[in-house]
Amino acid sequence: MSEVKKICVAGDHAGFELKGIITEYLKEKGYEVCDCGALEYDKEDDYPVFATKMAKSIAGGECPKGVLFCGTGVGASIAANRIKGVRAALCFTPEMGTLSRAHNDSNILVLGSRTTTAETSKAILDAWLAGPFEGGRHERRVKMLDA
Ligand code: RB5
Image (cartoon, rainbow, N blue to C red; front, side):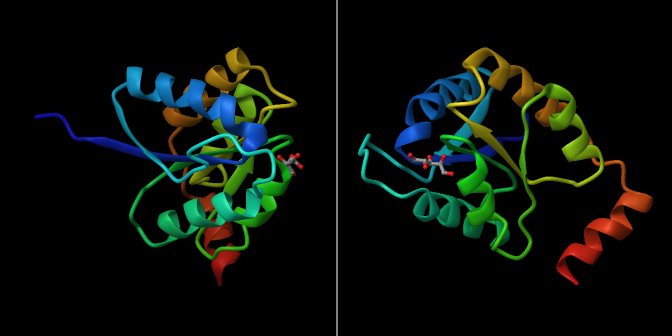
């Protein structure tokens, strides 16, 4: 039997539509997707709420990885990276996705809905999901982040 691939998603109103598109894409790829919200569109909602919820579930080991959204990706990144153990990487290209896994062992991919198209987002996600952590000298550096 194949292992269940689990991943969580979260985002505010600005990331709501892209979160839906990427959720469907992840399901097509065989992932079990856990949605940390927003569960409905509300233009008054606040990105720290959803970013923090996802970050805590990753830091607590409930979910191994997540994809996080906001308008630029900046606010969500700042919020998620305040939680110890989280390495949220805002990526604009597939190469950034690959390198954020290889060098930073990123456990959250952050995408900006106002800066990145759905097609580019899928390409970044593919690269990020495929990319193994290289370890070695990068392991030492990653350990320093939480020391
Ligand atoms: C919401 O309008 C927007 O500020 C938010 O999604 C994000 O881009 C913040 O960094």
